[in-house]
Length: 193
Image 1 (cartoon, rainbow, N blue to C red):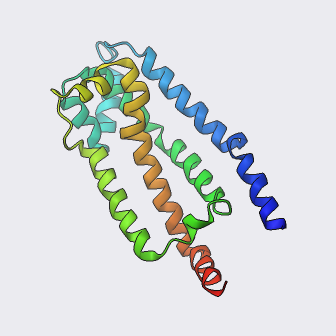
Image 2 (image 1 turned 90 degrees about the vertical axis):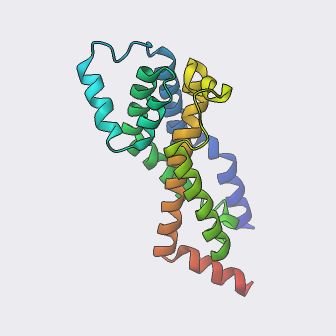
């Protein structure tokens, strides 16, 4: 009975968690930045160009987005800022996913075979978000995602940045769960029930 009531209390307070609120504030700040960045953000700003080039040397996605030639300056700078702040988002996502291990018990009880298949899917998604396969500058979807303020700020950020950071955080949480024995303990408890 106490396990059930504890589960209900944590699931109802999930959206009120400081980690979730911090994630929403982060997302809102990045949307605001994307909305208010001028198209000529890199013109006459050597430090912004240097910063964007520096970030592009670590994240191949930035050069790939620039190569689409859809608002290349603003997209290059915007995604450079997103990836520069990714450690903060990664920390928030990692802690929030790890915090839900008691409420999302089925996720932690998943058999190894299914987890490995899921990881293959995650790896494909991460590779796609970095190299933008099948994203062409002539496609209407690409023009919407990278050529409009709303598309870039809301949807491109979710698809090509937050999704990738979330997948990496989820993978790291699973690895930590395996290393500290939490996943194997849950598997044994499930088999004994």
